[in-house]
Length: 191
Image (cartoon, rainbow, N blue to C red):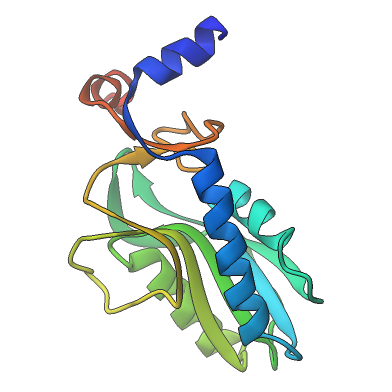
């Protein structure tokens, strides 16, 4: 193990889901999604950057025609949501008259996915919008929202790996783990 990998591993308090467990669950999700969207015009919108790894692995398991686009939005500063969702592109993808599946890494407060769903419905008029998340955190939602497809339910802990980050670190870990308090302090935004 390289010293960088060892350092990152030492900042993880525990592994929640190993890579093999994630891949097995993605097989199940892909089966559900393929069945539900059989014969329909589907556009998958991946929310960047957190859903990148999840989306890539899930989409390779969907044996059906679909379109793929990405949305760049932000609502986090450090380990907590600001409650304000900022769209970082000028135009939304064209999804008028199509079924849309939003992919995101985690559902916690609900702010981000709620804002995206509202904006899509108001501005682009898709036939439907469903939500698929890798993780659903067991917390009260600040916005009324539920995911249609969920990889795993988790407790209210700060998780990283497999696309999830803390201050742009840990995304490249092949598993999902809980970051320790020392790492949260070490990488916390200054000022």
